[in-house]
Image (tube, rainbow, N blue to C red):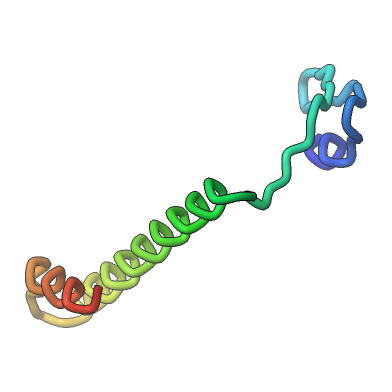
Length: 88
């Protein structure tokens, strides 16, 4: 179903079959996936920054969880946060 929709041309109408229903679809406009202009660049930067921060937090959490599950130790989240903040 998705493949059929993405293969459509602008202003094209089509009946697309789902698993239990049929859908009448009309593609009115195509919007570029690449953001343009100053607003697009800002949005791209915000998404990138958020992704990097989230990835850093996931890596640190996985490391702490692995250490705690494999060794008898306690890791202070406050100390970890302070150490991370020094690098930002």
